Length: 103
Image (tube, rainbow, N blue to C red):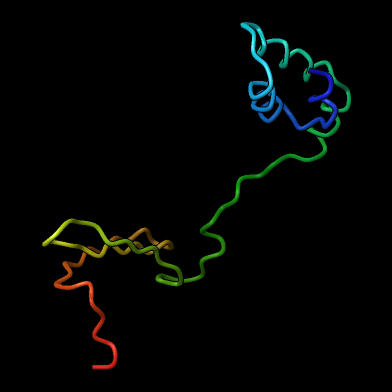
């Protein structure tokens, strides 16, 4: 357990890695105690607070980024388009999966 803890990767990753390598009934409690009593872990955790990424801050106007997917089974298929800025959803029935480009 000490070998895994040497990287001081934090509680969540330490538990994940610990479960991959070994397991016993109180493994989570022992990992929590080890991390809470570790001076290096406390210093690293306080020094680098992780802030949530707000994806909408990068989008400047509607339809600047969209997500699209084709849904359905033969013979009916639909194109689902979502505007990532406004979360507007558009559903269009497709008559064919072929492109008309160049005709």
